[in-house]
Image 1 (cartoon, rainbow, N blue to C red):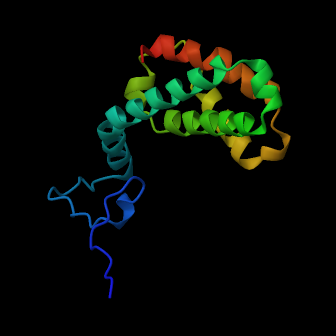
Image 2: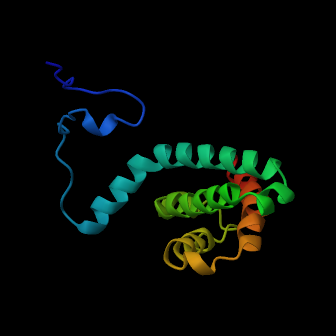
Length: 144
């Protein structure tokens, strides 16, 4: 009889690994302080995620507009990348975003919301523009 392993540690299987509870007690004094503390701790993680997303966007854009227009998988991938960037931007702490006043931080979040909640009406031209123009500009500004 085959018994499954207790801890499966393959790619994408992390959810099956038993996690330990944190040993530190979080500050529960106010919801705002909890949220700020959480955002500050996750800054490194979010920036690493954004770097990966920027790399993916760059690779997809390098295939060119013709490929984007002719390949539905490329268009779906581009929508996903843009939506994930918007999600990551929404998790950035205010202390970080204030350092870059030239970036309209609401735009990536709003674009993400449009993709997720009104996906049937998302204009592929807008997605391509974000992918090929806006993402590289944001990456250069952030230095990622």
